Image 1 (cartoon, rainbow, N blue to C red):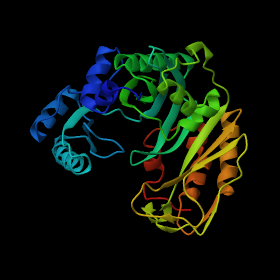
Image 2 (image 1 turned 30 degrees about the vertical axis):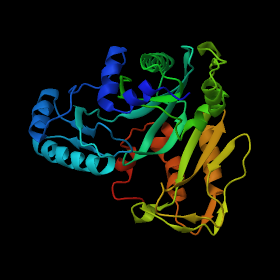
Image 3 (image 1 turned 135 degrees about the vertical axis):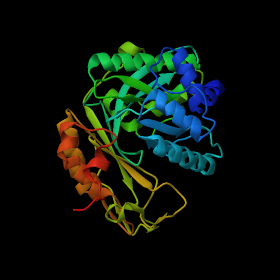
Image 4 (image 1 turned 180 degrees about the vertical axis):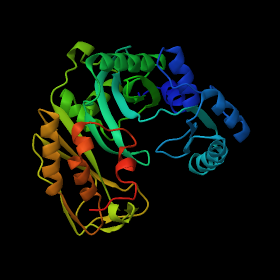
Amino acid sequence: IGPGVRAIEAMGDKITSKKLADEAGVNTIPGYPEVLKDGEQAVTVANELGYPVMLKASAGGGGKGMRVARNDEECLDGFERAANEARSSFGDDRILIEKFIEQPRHIEIQVMADSHGNVVYLNERECSLQRRHQKVIEEAPSPFLDEQTRKEMGEQAVALAKAVDYRSAGTVEFIVDPRRNFYLLEMNTRLQVEHPVTELTTGLDLVELMIHVAAGEKLPITQADVRLDGWAIEARVYAEDPFRNFLPSTGRLRYFRPPEENDRVRVDTGVFEGGEVSMYYDPMIAKLITYGDTRKEAIEEMRLALDRFIIRGVSTNISFLSALMAHPRYVSGDISTNTIAEEYPDGFHT
């Protein structure tokens, strides 16, 4: 069995998922409950909600079909641009509008559910370091959450999974404001790229659990069994040139030497030395994950591992990742989804 047809259909559409979330008692961002008819209606609703607002594709993902508007003119233009981008990317130009949360953090809850009604949450991942809505650095746990907020977010994630009869591994993504108010962003009905940081801090193999659940077995753990030990960080290694506005880089991998793996360093990749990085696939060529007893230790392990990661033949963002690891805002944990744009407004330069 997979996650469940109802779950995939419901959570794959932002309109349906928001309605279901409201019914399940999950916090949602204030917004208009239906699809916008046109730009004029978008402006009317935006004035009722109060600027700034976010215009977003109902079928969207990966940052496509999204525009922030801070006045009527930007709202009209944003509606047209978002709809056009959504139509070309997803074949679906339906647009939603909701209140835009300033200085938000992107924090998601990992859930695991079986076909016997058992659902657990496996703590959170902080995914706030993003560039153009694409995640760059993820970590577990979040340096921002307290125990009470973690519990409340986890319980709401479980409630949503139960509401759609979810089965398998899934992620409930939230936007969190500076006062730790949290709101549903979306639910991803699949295993996430950043799942290794959850595995390292819980000691659980998510893929193994998915296989057991798919075989119809009951989850071998309860919520009381879920632990949180140490700290893990994942950096996404992209084939792109950070010195040329992150232009995608293609070519043959003449030299590919990741750092040696051990109990504190993990490398997930599907490329190999001599292989070709083409223009037809996502530019992520590896995930580098490090673990430490504390966040400080995990950061130091990542800095050392990045220094030992050598790739030739294509440009990569490794230098940019190293700069992020050393940046005072990241080291302090004072981050939001705007951090990279604010700290590197003119692009990355050393």
